[in-house]
Length: 322
Image (cartoon, rainbow, N blue to C red; front, side, top):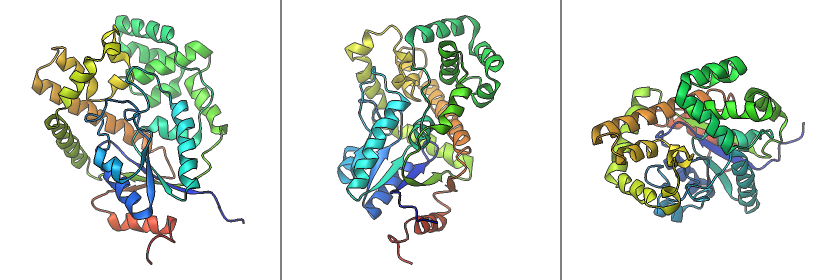
């Protein structure tokens, strides 16, 4: 059997607030690596504090890629991400550096590592019709419609996940094919020509993750997260939109709740509680998606450092002492 000569990459995956950024920085310092963000919020300029974007100091210490690619009102699809990120990975490997993928956006990881089928792009008119129907009938009814059309997708998508319900219905209405059919077709798409070690960082105790989420959000508030959202609200292109919260950038957890709070919909305590709850729900969805990555290695970042080191030693034998 011939040796696998594909270039190497490490994927640092996990739910939000699990310590991915810090560990990716550690790996990059140790192994002469460069970090490739796999996060759908970090591609937007101006989403810094609330998206936990690497600081200016961290970016100065280690090269980072796939950050600040679009304005918050500009579209950016998973397919565009995969295309752009593959070029970045090729460039990093060509310079003898180790690409370190770090983030928690499952769709971006899937598009990059496994490829996507040519399913229909987003269509504003179709989305507007679906949203109008949801306003009248409720998202639970829209989920029931999805169940009739595509039971596989309805099982995978939670009844409260409006964004993914909308996308699944949109794809079906535009193409006449279910999103599950399109996903199966993607299995034949070109794979990433790298050998990737997938490391999932996830505290074994869910309560620990919840505490980390709460502490991190409070730190964001202390770092003037609300002022960041006020600056976004003042941008003329966003002010010109009748429904800015429909933008993918502003649907990011924390930003939607902050925007509604500044609209006067919640007091400070309710805003904090809603944002933390939404972040916990995001972590839950991320963990569900990660369980489907059957070749990923799971580690508690605080309790299993020795096991993490062993995984690295097996993958990068030339880089670690025996």
